[in-house]
Image 1 (cartoon, rainbow, N blue to C red):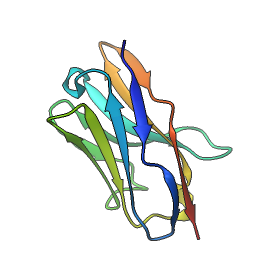
Image 2: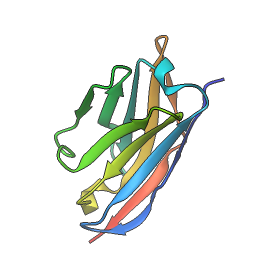
Image 3: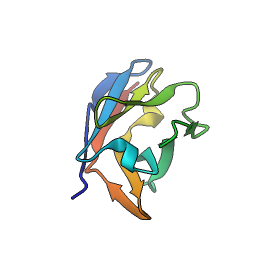
Image 4: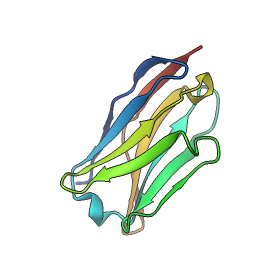
Length: 115
């Protein structure tokens, strides 16, 4: 059974940094793509960043240059390093993995950025 568990969220001041982790119950290389999404209060879930099985990355314009998605090749973990955080980054952040045409989601971790 595929499970994704996020951690690392919390409260941070604007301009600060956080690193989110997504621990998978299977090898992260078994996923075609893994990504981070977020959902702010009253808004739809939006894509933030992805990393393919080949290591290619892509970012939403709103986080480009501030966020970095990476993975630990020795472990089953994908990270989202967030820097220069803004109040508008406040959201619940979700890890997602696509495998064999199916999408798997974690339960989310809350990030709150105070001004």
